Amino acid sequence: MAIQTYGTVLKNVRIKSSYFLMEIDCPSIANETRPGQFLMLQISENTHPLLRRPFSIYKSYPTWHSEKRKKGHLFLLYKKVGKGTEKMTFFLKGEKVNLIGPLGNGFTLPPLPSPAPSILIGGGVGMAALASLGQALHSGELYLFIGGKTKEDILCEGDFLTGKSANLFIATEDGSRGKKGMVVDLFRDEIKRFNINLPYHVYICGPEGMLKAVSKIIKSNVWNVQVSIEARMGCGFGACWGCVVKTRDAEIPYHRVCKDGPVFPLSEIVWD
Ligand SMILES: Cc1cc2nc3c(=O)[nH]c(=O)nc-3n(C[C@H](O)[C@H](O)[C@H](O)COP(=O)(O)OP(=O)(O)OC[C@H]3O[C@@H](n4cnc5c(N)ncnc54)[C@H](O)[C@@H]3O)c2cc1C
Ligand code: FES
Image (cartoon, rainbow, N blue to C red; front, side, top):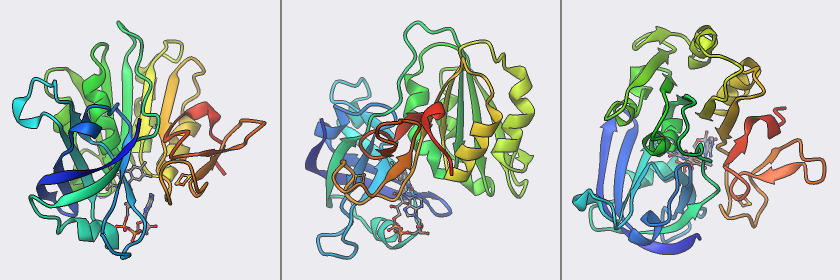
C-alpha cells in the first residue's frame, strides 16, 4: 500500500550528461516496492513547483536484503528536463524529501520457473523502470534492446550484465553507440530471431512514439507484452483523472495511468 513519508537523501550525483542518480533512505517504501512501480516526489516545500513529480523506483533494497549497505534504500535515475528535475539536482546529502509510494501496479512477472525468453525494450530514461525488472527475472533468456539519441542516453546496460547472460542490442540516432537509427528499427530488424508462436514475455518502457511504433511491429498474439506508459500526472494516486489513456475497455474506455497502470497489456491500449 502506498504511504506518504519522508526519506533522507544519501547521495545525489550526476552519472552522465543530464542524468542523475539519487539514493534515498526510505525503508517503508523500499520494503513494499515491486518492479515497475513509481513514487511521487515533492520537489519543494513551497509552491514552486506545486505538483509532485513521478519517478520510477529504479532500484529498491528492502530491509531484509543481503546487501548490508543498501538495506532500506531506494534509487531514482532521473533526467534533468525542466524546473522540477533541475531543483532535484540541488538536493543535498542529509536533506529530507517527501515521497508518496510505491504507486501503480508494476510489471507482472512470469510464473516460476519460466523457460520462455524475455525481451526488454527501453528508450532513454525509460530504462529506469526496466532495471529492477531485469533483476527480478530469474530464469529464461534475456534480450535487451536499448535506444537513445546519442551514446549519452544509453543507460543501465550494466544492471543487466551482472550474473546472467543478456543479449544486448543498442541503437543511437546519431550512431555514436551501437547501430545508427531508432531502437524500434533495430528491433524490427532482429524480430526474425524470435518465434512468434512461443510465449515470450516482452516489457517495454519509453516515449509514447516508441511504444506506438513497437506495437505495430509485434504481430504475435501469444506473446505477453506489457508496456509501461509515462503520462503527465497531477496527483499520482487516482484522484484527478489527469493522466488517462484510451483502452479497448468498452465500459470504461479511459484508464488512469497512475492507478490502473502505469503497466498495461499492449493489446489493451488504443493509440490515437
Ligand atoms: C510513471 C512515470 C515514471 C517516470 N519515471 C521517470 C524516471 O524514472 N526518471 C525520469 O527522469 N523521469 C521519469 N518520468 C518523467 C518525469 O516525471 C518528468 O520528466 C518530470 O516530471 C519532469 O518534471 P520537470 O518539472 O523537470 O519538467 P517540466 O518543467 O514539468 O517539463 C519539462 C519538459 O518535460 C516534459 N515532461 C514533463 N513530464 C513528462 C512526462 N510525465 N512524460 C513526458 N514528458 C514530460 C514536458 O512536456 C516538458 O517538455 C516518469 C513519469 C511517469 C509518469
Ligand atoms: S495523476 Fe491524478 S488520476 Fe492519475
